[in-house]
Image (cartoon, rainbow over all chains, first blue to last red):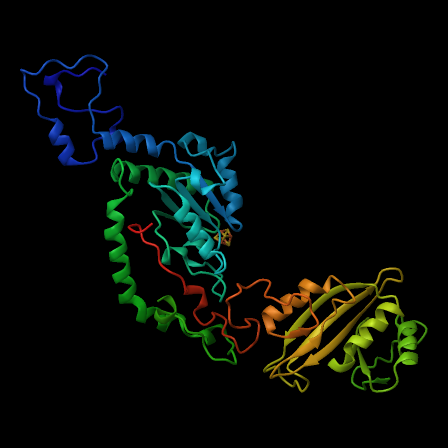
Length: 240
Length: 184
Ligand code: SF4
């Protein structure tokens, strides 16, 4: 694509790759007719946008598959659904080589420290997908041993509902994450600055609804039986 | 040997009883009062006190041909309607693979410190199964070579399959540090 100084300040190879930040785009939009003409086959954009565009199209997933959802994740990697179409087919089993954690399945309380450690071992920038009802909320496994949503203890970028999610949903999540990567992040920073705001918001929401969840979830006798030891401690005390 | 009155089944005649040989041998070896039997359909169960359990198990293995420990597990009968025996019951399912005979040995243990002799000297396979029973019910197996938790993490303090342990736990599942995007 050829650009001349008079035809507009900036463009990029695809519309998604529009400059991420208004500030940067305005800083390169300072052409004047007296500038020398830009040669042919030249693209002007921001460095962040190019880097994000590269990153989003070559995600290396870390398949943290602990349960049945992992089977669906394997299907996405195989030829019928073919996650390679979105550049995310290189699944690595070493966290040092990955930048996309896909947690597929329930996370037991014994596994949670392992999961956190693997997350910390992944190099920046990194993203995380919570796949399926169990990973996101504990699903039907509301017991002493299963973490009720691993997002209580780790950042998550995209949640996928379903038990298990269809492969199409996983592909959709990858595409959503690509959009997110393109929008946010910078060349060398921790990927998504708006995640920090989001985490603060989520923490305050949790504090607000804690009392509601105790009332809703604290009644074990709603299943029709009463345990000799009395109801478990659920809700706010349990999550702190 | 005594047969408990509630469970003796008149339809099991001595000729048709596949366990007659075993029971005869045991009666010769142990006198009255060491164990009682009960039956459910074609299952034979021997109830024995913890003090004589190891003796009975070795005799079953060495004299009666039960070379294979098929299963070992526990039950907590706290709050079970009409239950008058000890709170915990540990069952040993034994098989004689040559004569295709199967029987169950039941031993009851009670609080405050439930303990049984370990069966690992007889069957190596009892090792992990006893560790699981210990992990879930806190029943101690004396003489076990390596009695550690097998499923729950080492630092777990409770015995989760006990009936007085709440289904959702006491907050152990949510006792982790929180990693944020800024820190990680
Ligand atoms: S969400 Fe459903 S399919 Fe996925 S791990 Fe849980 S039970 Fe299995």
